[in-house]
Image (cartoon, rainbow, N blue to C red; front, side, top):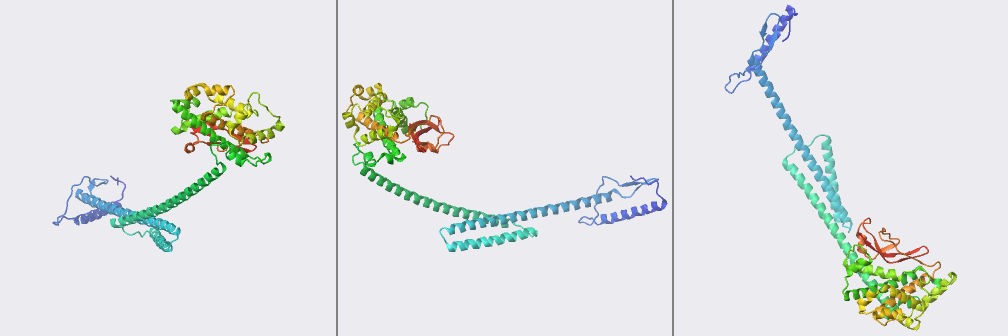
Length: 476
């Protein structure tokens, strides 16, 4: 309530007039609200508006007038709220339709661009022109959408308009995927043709290699094979690392032939090859079952190349030339043996350095239990022990391998400085500079997972030239 004690009579009179006027207006407004039957609606009031004057309280507005005012005010607010929400939904629908059109147009540009790239290779002028027209048309459409957005002149949206835009977008995406699918098919056909061409080249190269090998080695069973032809006119001054590499590959082939024969003998004797392989190199994880031959190759190479770095191969009672005479001495030994059969040489010169080498290596390599299991007795080992040489396929294969290792040793000491031999220890990280894997599939494993399991064939170093050693990679 307002305290009006200090008001003057003139002021009091003006207030009374204002109150009367306000009450009259409310009566007129209330009279305008009627039911369908034309009667004035009267509502109960919850509050009374009072002003307290100096002498007494005067009711200026009756409760039913106030009720009418509340009713009018409430319904007016509700109508405005309803109009605002409706407008908000319309604007949101218009924006969603605008975005649908925008993404549909962008998808069309992407599809047209993919079509343009596809038409360039192989060159297709009609396809390029059609794709170019689509790109230009969609870019114009994007420009129009931009102007509508900036000027806030977006068209009223309907559900059909938005669905049509989404359908257009999906069609453009489908077209893009179809074009990419055709592109991948074309690339696949190209790769297939490349593979076919490379296979033909490989077959041609293999055919040429077989013809060349046949020409160089007309008698594969004899020892007067490729070396006797390739090194026929070789002089000491013409030596280079490639010659050592060829002799090494020549020795590798013989080592693998002997290991294959040894494994066949083990299998015939009923040996457990898995247990035998684990006894040679324990704890190695093999990628394939046929990789179990590599530990046996490792064992044979370990025995055959032991002492390789020493001029007399660490053999007792074998002449060792002075350093300044080594090149000529060992090159002469290489020339002497390269073109003869090992068994014939051993028969004519049983006490030669090569004969002593064969005897020492056979006794170390073939354990008595192994020979007894293979042949049922120790006759071959006993014969070798007293200076003889058995006339068996097994020993002949061993002698051929021993000859090639001996030739490699002689050639290594024919260089100045002489070639050095090396191998890598188990657990080392793989290095393409110093190693090559005997099992290519192991190289597909992560570098931090595979390590060197063991060295199969040793490597060589001649000055700054490195001939890689062959290793077996393992995950354990």
